[in-house]
Amino acid sequence: MLFADRAEAGQQLAEALRPLASSDPVVLGLPRGGVPVAFRVAQELGAALDVIVVRKLGVPYHPELGFGAIGEGGVRVISEDIVRRGGVSEADVAEVEGAEEAELLRRARAFRGDRPRVPLAGRTVIIVDDGIATGATALAACEVARAQGAARVVLAVPVAPPDAAERLGGRVDELVCLSTPYGFSAVGEWYRDFGQTPDEEVVALLARAAAPDPSRTAAEVAVEAGGVTLPGELTPAGDTGALVVFAHGSGSSRHSPRNRSVATALNRAGLGTLLFDLLTPAEEADRANVFDIETLAGRLVDATAWVRRRAPGPVGLFGASTGAAAALRAAAAVGTERGAGIGAVVSRGGRPDLAGDSLGDVRAPTLLVVGGDDTRVLELNRQAQDRLRCENRLDVVPGATHLFEEPGALDEVAELARDWFTAHLTAGSG
Image (cartoon, rainbow, N blue to C red; front, side, top):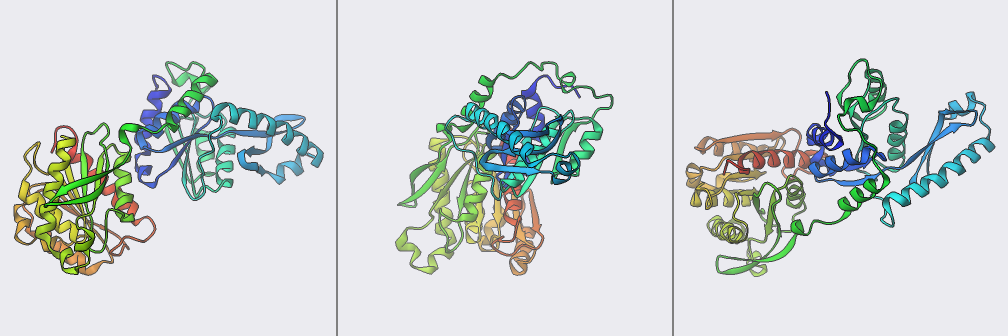
């Protein structure tokens, strides 16, 4: 496999890494050449980008042999076995470490300036380089990231020799390598353009990634629907031009952490989102209102029209619990006509049965997502699916309960929703 340049390599690498997008990863580029690749990966995944600066600690009389590595934040990874077998004294360790620490700090300051490091504690970390020769530096970076608190370390490179890939694959949580050609002699031979990456380019890319995109910043809005004003939060669509309106379930609001988690995953995929309250505070005081599906659906129809006056692209609906019934009833009411209707619906732990006879009138492609251990709601969804006359699918998340609170369950919901909306709301659909 021959790459045109580092940007193209990053684009292809991002496609292979796409399943990790919903885990809110941090992408770390190895300077210098790994940063242009990492920049494109971070862009495509909607992930935070940073540089990981590490310095290998070499045995004094044999510098190519590393006995450890250091990273920012005082992280040090030492191989006691190599120190012992290499006869490296404590004085040698201190001397080498002192010299390398000064260089580490200088390079980190040069690349990042005054910006703080992106915290890694508890996060999935994707370490990216433009290729691997021996893999010593990449492995040191992985060890440093782990020492800085990363919960999962993924090493991602466009190309590496087969033996290095096999060796490194056993030292990280996951290795993503696009090509492992035999006869490998140098990384550069697998690129048409493998010019040097100057420090200035690294600095510019990191600064660009750190700068917020004002066109996609969430804004507090007031949605006029059903004769009342409802507070909401609107994040504009990205390149897809499509937007998803959320309908929360009973006892919830626009602040629902589960819906906001899914919305973030959709935003990273270039979809806009509107999270808004379906009821006023006074209305929420009457429990009966959360089951007034007709009123909730009417407000969703109005909210969809409100969105279209500001963003005329395709619109989908994401409903949870009773909000799913409102979403399906709203979709049935407005149809699927381009520019006016609903392009797709996703239900999370929903009560589609509460949409009643409207189920047979839904024409928007509909995805029902239910936890495998949410047995009562699962059965209600199966019965509702039999009444749908549109393209539809029922996906069961094994081991998940109604609120998808189990580890990884909500991430799976987000991935399913992202893929469904992307497939049905992007150009050519809707």
